[in-house]
Amino acid sequence: MDPLSALRDFTVRGELDSISGVGDDFRFAGDYSFPCSIETAYRSKQGNLYTLETLVFFIRHHHLKHTDYLQSARFHRIPAITLPDRKPLLDYLQGKVASSDAIEILPPTSAVGVGDTEEYRPEDPSYHIGADPSSLAASSGGGGGGEARVQEPLDYVSLLRVLERPLKDRESLLECRNRDFYSVLVASTRREEERQRMESRQRKDEIVAKTRLISSEDRVDDGGGFEVTPKPKMHLKGTKIGEGVPIILVPSAFQTLITIYNVKEFLEDGVYVPTDVKVKAMRGAPKPDCVTVQKKLSRDRVVAAYEVRDKPSAFKPEDWERVVAVFVLGKEWQFKDWPFKDHVEIFNKIIGFFVRFEDDSVESAKIVKQWNVKIISISKNKRHQDRAAALEVWDRLEDFMRSRSHS
Image (cartoon, rainbow, N blue to C red; front, side, top):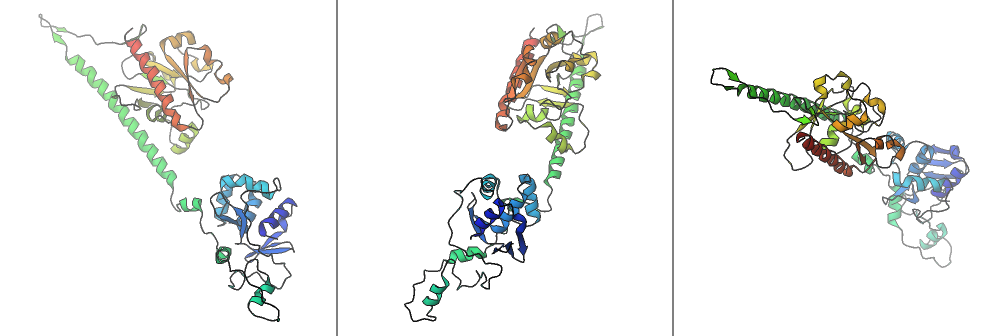
């Protein structure tokens, strides 16, 4: 019996515990013995034949998650099966399917019985896979006076493959031992946060400088006094936008898709990064109180910057005058203690966005659909589509700012 069939037979019968490793061989109870490194008839989608050692380790650890299984295989220095091969191989070994296209008919390899005197000797050039020992003797002129039987040419490739033992697969080649790329990610994240803080301070300094410049341009009247030039003001539907950078509010709750942790990647880079991934990358660093974002997704010159905050409870009246947009959670309690009568007044003065996964149930947006809020849908897996969603937010926000500045 070939090693693949023997392993399948023992798996179906629930006798995997009867397979034991003795030296460089696997012994199947008292029935068969095969070298650990022998290639089986199961060919992976990558083109290589899986060894018996690989299949035995997999069938004993198939209950693990694939990532955990890979780590365990690497730890034991055993070549692992690939994810695409996992389910069809398991179905075959457990007897759920009778055959598989991945199985190749190889020259028969005789399993050596535990009590047999004849040993499996692939290293012996005179050992021919699948050859009849009597035909070998006849062809070599040994014994008997009968007509010598013609021996088929030795399959040297098969002989070499029996001796081969894969040292590395594609995943192990990609490993970089003693290299911690997580620290690189953390360092990059910290540099980006520092850049954001620098930009925020720089913009605030520019605002202060412009204010002082306006004050210095006061004109002297004929009487020797000073005639102060009034400062230009923008109005937001009857309510002025306060001096300083406009504010965009995001929820502080983690169950929303857009938070202060990932809003910059979404609005500036057009990429959605889950909040939990960003939090892990920060490795205990404190949550930022404010993040500055600019439109960088088009060839348009950057002409505006926005502050993103998630603690409106700490706002002063002048801070509320700067609020121009809000990402909603979809819950009424998000607006508790806001200086507005209800959500109708809120979304008359502030543009609202609700970001959701496109395959979420309709119920998740049931309340939001009753509000004057723009629903933005993104994919759970297709990150290349995030850019279009981010641009839609920017287009709506810029239209809103233009309409309010001319009102």
